[in-house]
Image (cartoon, rainbow, N blue to C red; front, side, top):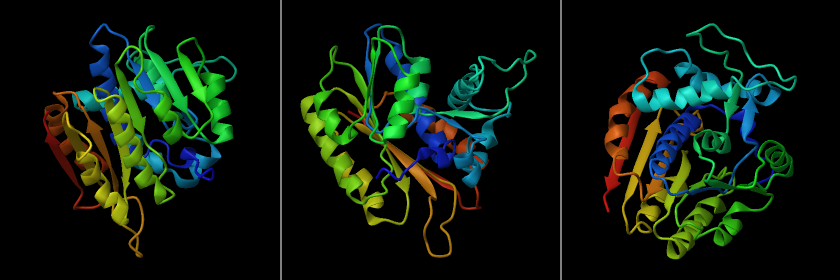
Length: 294
C-alpha cells in the first residue's frame, strides 16, 4: 500500500471527475451557515508538481485537466472546478514568487491540487478538516502545508481512523473515501467503513471514488454501496479510454455519493456530455448517471 504515490496520476481524467463532484458538494454544504467537517481518509500529499519527475513519467494530466485548461466554453460546474485549479497555480512558489499575469490570461499549468487543497479553497473559517494519510512522506508534506486550529493531519490508516471521526460536532460532514485500490481488499474495506460510519452518523454525506478497471470487485462496488444508503444515493461514472491489449488499464472512474445534494443529478446531467466529448480517448466514450432519491 505504501508504494502508491498519486503524483504519477495527478490531474488525470479520474481526478477531473472526482474533483468536479467534490467541488459541487462542498459548495452545497457551504450554502448553510452551520459549520461542517471535511474528512479525507486517503488525503495524499495535498498538491502535486506537474513538471516533476512523477507526473512527467506518465503525463496523465495532459488527458485530464490539460484538455480543459484554456477552454472558454466550459459549462458551469466544470468552469468552477477549473477556476479552483487555476487559483491553486497562482500561489507563491518556494521563493515566495507568484505568477504575474495580465488581466484575462490563464496561468501556466504547473501544479495540481489534491482533494484537501480543493476543500481548503472552499471551506470557511468555522469549518474543520481531518486528513488521514498513511504514507509517511505524504503525511509530512500534508503537515507542512496544512496547519491551523481547525485542521488535523493524521499519519494513520484512514479506514480505521474514520471510526473516531463520526459523528462530528456539529453533526455536518463530508467524508471522502478514495483509496488507491492497489490491494483488492480495499474494496471490502470501503464497504465496511461506509457501513460502520452510516450506522454512527446516518445524516453525513459520503463520497466514494473508485477506478473503472477489469476487476469484478470494481464492478460490484456501486451495487454494494446502494444497500448502505437509506437516505438516497447518486452514482456517476465516466468512461473515456480503452483497456490495453491484455484488457488492463484505467478506462474511467466512478463516484458514489450517499446523501447527495438534491440538485446534483440535474447539474451533472447537463455537464457530462461535455466531459465525455472533451476527455474521450476513443469513439465509444460514455457516461452513466443514476440516483435513488431519499
